[in-house]
Length: 624
Picture (spheres, rainbow, N blue to C red):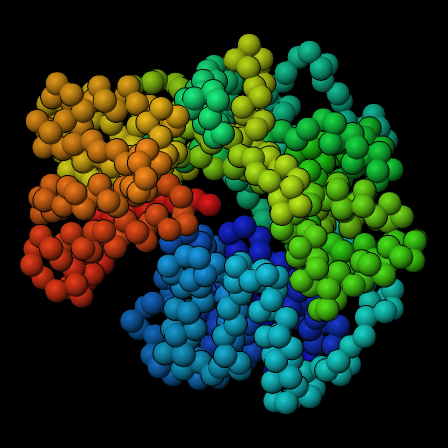
């Protein structure tokens, strides 16, 4: 088939939403008879982009306008000065972005990609679409009408794009097609069990690599294999017992290998799921937990190459579910409901599922599913007549993901230990259902006397370890203080030769959630690394201890002279904490301080701070 009649869909995702949107675009195109190729941007050779006639980009914006990791190399390539304005003169493209209008740099990645592709000579098929998490239907509120316009534009360009026509009715079971995965069942003796009282770390590591690489089309198992296994040695609440927020100081030691990290690094943990939830899922889906299975892709191009044994070795079905399928925490995607409708034997359930999967039912599905954070298990229990094959469950159940935490210790102060500062997540849904965070609540439930193996990975975050002599301005309200505890510990080891630190911390009440109070206060006195004698200082904003709310940005303005003095001396700025309004409010405070203290116009202050960021001296690590 001629290349002009096929579509290339390229996506860059961090949480899976962009992949979900890309897959939906692909399915809708194929239903109309249009052949597609779909690749993650890190699987695509950017130098071949001029050879592509029709390309759809689906990209998310992460953090404070950051590019997803899978897009970084592609974006760097596009920024080459050697690429001229005719480079993409034969390429037609469009961009759909996923973002959150609650953030200052809303859909920043999609906007800058669209502009760069135009600058390189690309022709826009359709004005970019911008999905918004704040929409009552999430990003799909924008995706549905945008996608409808896209098919119309392509059809008008060339009706041969869609041999089956522009408008398709999906009522035929054959339209469902085959699941992407294929499961082979083997004799239950194919996997040797380990006695429950004995923990074999090598066997556990092998199970994790085997399970998680079965779901990956990539040859490398580097990400699948844990860097080490940890055990909990301390679990200490650091908020007042009667307070409605529970924050824990957690300390870990390795069960295997040694721990290697720097201050500012991030620890990822693979959480354990509730045994009761796993058993309920097995019962609901009529699965034999003792079955031995091999999971592989039906698409031979996606299969792992020979020599990567993980894809060939069988695994117990229950182990596979435990380690890879998030059955009781994450909400299923819209396509999950569409596929369920094909396997519902009760007519009223089938109709309800078809409605949820339709454009008309989109808003109701969002209220039922995403807003209430229904889990896969809860949805399956709400539709008891659905008998979905395990292959579809494997494909459509959200993957069990690692959770990332800023490390709150210095390896030089705590050799072979790693500390975390974890807020135990719980909330109430619009229908007053209590929800809890999977990983934080699991960690909070652990006791140091238990020998629970915690799979862990270390990696670099957004806060590079600073040079010991570099002056620092740290802003870390709430658990945002976590990485800075490590920074302060490290500098205190050699306080006489370390640069000054100005630290702004914030919490609600001095008596309830002043995290690590004694630690900060001790280092701000008697010539400590946070002391004014050292040229720094420690300032706390208690937002609820007075009628008018006071936040870290207010304390920064109060100390604008000190802030500017350190900035003038070449200080680096580090901001960590909630990703809602805090980073933008802090940046606005810096702009105001630079304008006031230096006497320049606001625009010049903004440019100065941008230069600071480009020079690697303004770092932000924020989380939802």
